Amino acid sequence: MRTSKPASQATRRATPRPEFDSPKIIRRDDAAHHVWGDVEAGFVTDRVYLSTRQLHVLEYELPPGGEFRHSPMNQTIFGGDVLYFVLDGTLVLADPSSGELRRAHAGNGLLFRRGTWHNGFNPEAESLRVLEFFSPPPARGTGSEFARRQPPLDSTTYHDHRWDRRWPEARDESIKEARLLPVGDDNALWGFRDHQASHQVATLVDTEFLTVRHGLVMPGHAEDFDLVPDETMIVCTEGELWVDVFSPSGGYAPTCLTPGAAAYLPAGCQERVLVRSASRARYLRGSGRVPDGWVA
Image: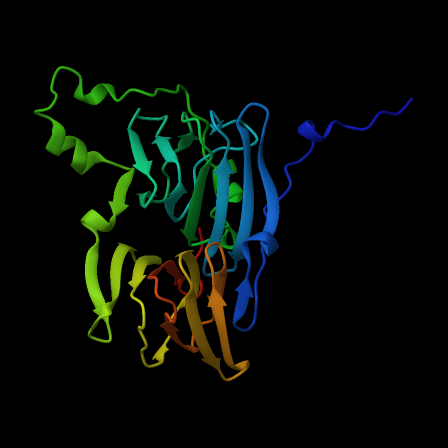
């Protein structure tokens, strides 16, 4: 008698890779759905907005008490720059190779770079929602392909013993050695778009591969079009944000984003944002740039 192999023992299903050749609006409910993980590592539900050869953007969710760790099938170590930005709840992120552990509340995030082990936890009594920006993206071999090539951890720890008997004297040293880097409005690089205080932009992350900015747009704001130099995704997180896009292939395409909706902007198009309502709007804007010929 033949029996089928249990799904939990089958080869892991690859994360969807939606990509577009012109400007595109993606509503939260229309994003590609995916379940990551296994019994040992835990399970994470994903909504994938975009996954091209320049940029990977998704929202993931953990229920109260939920977590993800690592397993032989799902090693949580990547080959690119990754920002986890918390939309709702509190993320506890740990590097199980060193014991480094950080907490990020809603409106803040954690950046980690290539080759960083990471496990995530939601110990609170509310759901955790996190927006992930990742470049160089999995389409370049930086996700599961990179992880499979890494030796498994010999041991796992959730306490950083490097600073035992030296705290708080070793605080500055621990900051220099950190692999999980806190980001948020309080430590961002702030500026205006087009010299207008009604559109304030906080640079959260800016590496050779990945830029993520948090925008705050006040009621009545309007601005001129500007060139989009890199492949970009804008995700509305508060209010109503009008995004006008002009591209040679798609022409003029205005839309109004509400929280959870996103606008994909290909490199070379032009874009501006406006707020028409009496309430401010917020967004996260991620851009990826990977040179031709780059390999993980």
